[in-house]
Image (cartoon, rainbow, N blue to C red; front, side):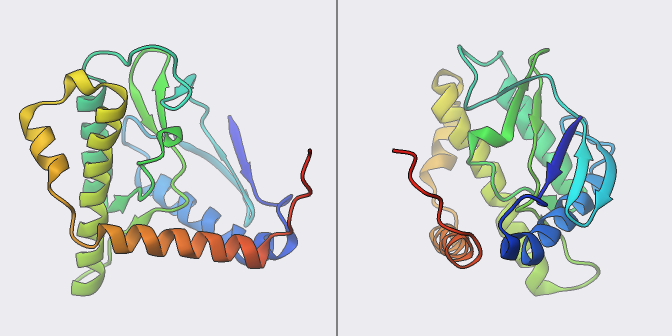
Length: 193
């Protein structure tokens, strides 16, 4: 098991941001409890911490050697199942959020940045959800290009060449929010020279 815990974070971050991130991840994992390729929520400890199933393997970022054949096709299937349950990951470009399990299967972890589909008829939220889902799909291809370029098909290359609407704005906005949050809500760490 893995414990995700914000109790040791900087005080302002812990009080203001930690509970939001835990609530989002807990909600996403509950919705995805039947998706093969997503770790299970084991227990909710409190507003600052949850326990998640540990996946034996390495992150795509830390993986040594080639990924198993068909890995990215299976990852795309996991992402499709996640979207069908009304969740977008929103941080799949980070190869640290994709695990290559010991059996070669893909797992997606860290749903703290996720976006949930709106309930009922909400055109704005549902439009945003579709944009984030398209960005997740595009991120799978970006990871494939980086970690298994020989597996790219012509349609993958064509899709990678087509910019996603609003992608640059969304990335810039996300980076700005993250940097502002870190600057305002965390203490500067001393250099370890």
